[in-house]
Length: 364
Image (cartoon, rainbow, N blue to C red; front, side, top):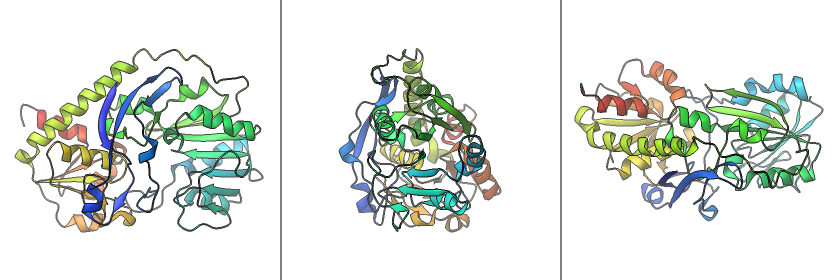
């Protein structure tokens, strides 16, 4: 089991530090769920989840440009399985960036999300449900991990729309555990998936990965037989791997909080949402309170991270203050190369794991 107290949400930013630090924490207890055949958070509290005006997900890369990884493979996928004649609904569409991309390419696309700030004829400021608008393809980009009992949700979708396919993107549990990215575990992700979880329940039409295996996607169709009572064989290594992540979390936070200021003066976290919110809160809890954060999404600048109250800066604001006593921790290791290039040797750059290793080294 992996257990930790973390911010109840992982994508909210506040105009004042007082508002930020007043937000609730919640427990995550990750373990194999025998009834679902996946790893779930047994302590998930849906009443604490909020998609209010402070909620801010991003599709920006480190240069602040819109970056939708799905667009790198969607045309190829479409050529194999569907066309612009097919209607597409993006469930959990954010501000509709992917919907806009689809419509600009001739697709009939709509999106649903309660965080839509400018609803219109094809962007709806509400949750999608199985009785909502029909489609030939439903897209769920990092949405299913947020839904309790995901198989029930998908079965309900297919019951109402049996001819449809569903394209699902998710951060792969195999990548999280293999790379030991324990700070990816957040309370608002109630489920953690691998591609194999889907092959046990639905016909998998196509599948793939990107970002060095961090993200996986599956295209599935309606189950050909009742999958509500499937007995999925327990993953024999999952308990040990979750426990390893738990132990690594404790050791990493202890070493960094106790030794960081012996070698450096400024701790900067690059990447403020999701992983960044979890890291910042954990370090503050362990006593390393003098942190700052930087993010490429301008909507987050001059805002404070949920629970930790760490202030978010723009990259340009940060640039002039970088020096040899600064250590930038890149919350997503897949962005390390790009951030290192941007820093251009002005300061130290690494991941949480590499910082831990450096501080724990006998030669430190």
